[in-house]
Image (cartoon, rainbow, N blue to C red; front, top):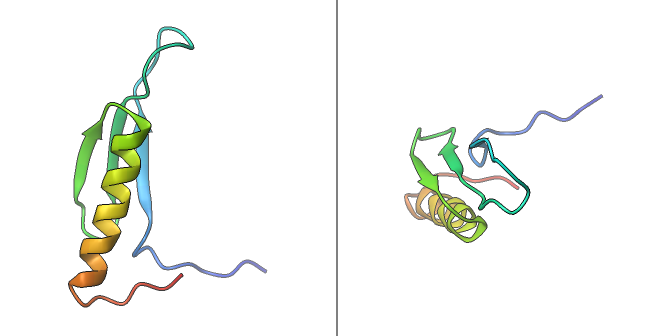
Length: 66
């Protein structure tokens, strides 16, 4: 039996098609709970958005379960 998880920290990540293996990581990420989204051009930008989005959601007083 699988445990059901909250969508408060769920993200949808869409990656742009790449021409070759050396292409930079690019795409779009969206926080499911708020619909907040952005485009990213590197792993660093992707992770930064995710961390900041969760931090903002937590600081707004919403409950965030692990």
